[in-house]
Image: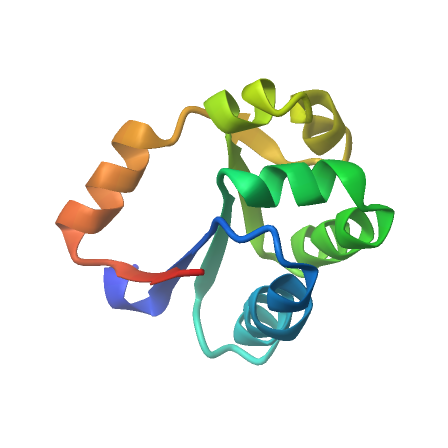
Length: 114
């Protein structure tokens, strides 16, 4: 698969409106409508806390995964914020993302940071 067909979204904002009106909408439509072959949502920092504390956000995260978006989270952040288990319970892959993010950046892959 051509790396130019893959999109990574690095979501760090704790603002629910940013999630609802950009991250969620673009990730879902990007995958469902075939704009990208693969869409990966990386939950990092403050966004992990929002996912852990907001049931509606968790339901939307589950919907993204059900529609083929790969949803993953930074393990260090999720553990520091006390939400790793909540994220894992909704099917989010929780792993250390420092090295993989560096590889994404060095590969020239498409990356949106929010």
